[in-house]
Length: 186
View 1 (cartoon, helix red, strand yellow):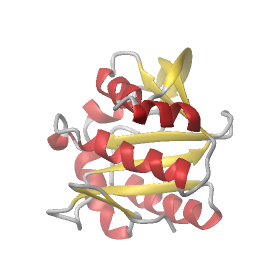
View 2 (spheres, rainbow, N blue to C red):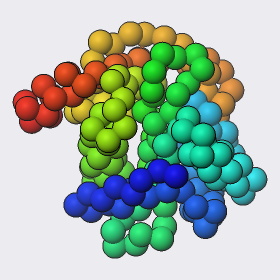
View 3 (cartoon, one colour):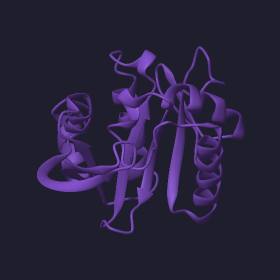
């Protein structure tokens, strides 16, 4: 099971079956799913229940660390998810995330990423992370660059919600670059 991480405003906790309705509430929104790789649109209860099962299975075998993002003021409602996972088509660990649209623009995802990236390097001993964002998703680009992710490489990936290949930018972050970014105040 994933650890629980606490930030100034957030509780990053393991995903539980009670999170499924919130996942449907926030992910049945094309403005979110269009920027993701594996989240379908429309997004329904069966999709949410399947993800909850996947998160539990992956936590048990160590191939993923999924965190429900909840506000400290309302810790029972998941407002998003942030994940560390091993991808079969990539080398090493990959950071991925989404946040419900009502919570955009308040730096919640930057705060969550700070905690999860630190956890990856310091607690899990991960040496290198990768992440991708779709061209046009400037908020995600800023989040990743704020963590110190760099070495942009163009690639193409399939978006389930869009039903087609989309242009991506893949970034990487190793431990030394992470430490340097934090020392520079990123």
